[in-house]
Length: 359
Image (cartoon, rainbow, N blue to C red; front, side, top):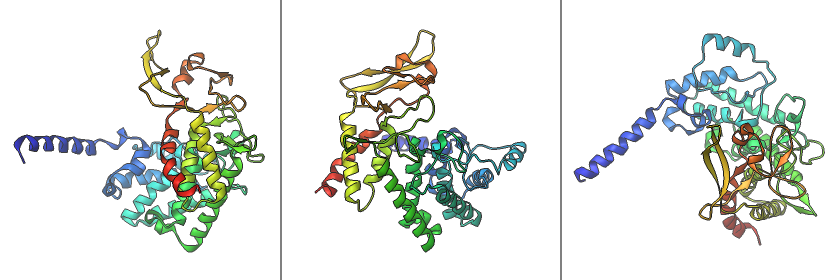
């Protein structure tokens, strides 16, 4: 190896080492929970994080959302967390509960520490108990009044649950410690019911399946409202996650094949071509953003489409639909992902899936 090549190697090796040494507090909880090097799980640092995860687990078996479990907590905070054990704030939104379970599975596999396994299994019991008889899941369990009772696809809540159930029932190695014959039967049954619920909630227009809303009424299966700016609609983002899950089913039924075909066709017909985000400084001197047309850009999709016109819209906290970002306030304009690219990954995967399953 030449001296110059050696120096390049040393330089990049140094970058990797520095990246590996970056404090975990500079990362998101989700990346710490599932994205660290395998050997990190079982380290003293990971065990300290695990103690926080165990501490925050509610008596119901689930976890609250938006907690940076990887950050140090004081003794005073620990006392407050212990007192909140009975809080009815266990939730599936924003990756809560499923992310903590994935972390605990990694910890158990590296350490064989029984309390990690027990906590994971308690979380699994929570998921199984939270499922509705119709196969869907609410956002919260125990149930909380309001939109929280809806069948919740928002932020891939149900998709995250179904992926764990599928992987347990398929004896994926990371979950082998929990996959007894009884558990495999329960998770397989719950998964199948969840897929059936997905098919039942797919929005029908003139007898043809389209996509999904971010949440559906738990009784009627119709698109439902959540927060004031999350109105009944066709959802670009949540639908992409659902379609991807359906395409990963190893032996799809004709109903699933039809569901995927119709949903991908709908997304393909509702792309916003040659569009991208652009950041700028507004007249108030604040960082802002907007959507611009660019012939060199790829395509985007709206987070929400009107159920009657099928046109994209945005919305402020007043619940009034608007056509453009400029028509809503700064806070919602910059605090919500109104336009996304997630459907492109689904559409890119679709041709190979179609060749395999569409006769």
